[in-house]
Length: 363
Image 1 (cartoon, one colour):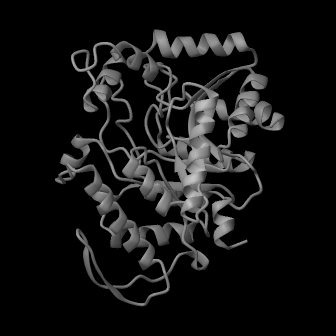
Image 2: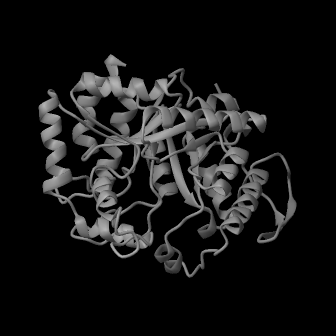
């Protein structure tokens, strides 16, 4: 198997793809002070990838994070750069697809294309790309880069960037690239991607410009919405599919979630309450909201609700219960039309074995 369709299917026939999200970051996606939280050291990441590969998890998706969210734990303050993280994990695994998440405005496309091809050969075609345009001003300042104020301009640049990368990975020997923002001369890239096909590409654009960008350019749209109802989720998935077909494209819709699975529903609920109520890093949550311009002053009505929502899982679907509960919820999510889900645990390495033993067989 080596064609483009094989890459998009992650080289398997699983109808609903299961992935681990955020394991390259300290705390993962749990904004908690619980001492057993994920610390994301390399040895743990390596063991997690090998275990995920063995039990049949389809993909690993990292978060591109350059600065932490302060607070008591400096949430996501210790992270691995995602392309090199993917290279290390691809070299240690045999089947799983590993993504890199890349800020297009912070990485030169010639360098990015060379990194992507290198990772792709290490993984023999199991490398995938999550392109992000970026939102965090503090991270842009860290690079000495100004985020473009006009939202449309950000995606104009993003389009040029992905066009240049794809063209480098294509059959041309040498070319010049002229755009509004990029002017590249005498561009050459060898080797080309593994067996000549471009890696699976994902994007999480949510605004009208971001959604249009994802539909034009990617194989997978990653949504991080916290849906008001199952009907609302299905409506969004159906709308994406309709919009993609209008462009003569097929785009899989992926979502995100958190899982707490224990032998009994009561155990799972009690543990979830412990780390989302008794051991919350409220300072980190407040800082994350502040970066997005959300404070008690700017949004007095919804501030407490948004704080609690972050404490209870940053976005998407929260699955808390026994193996039957979690497997039913995953099946329900699949029935809404989603192609896959990237989920997190409080501690990935401790919790994945039970999930693999009890939930996967039920699916």
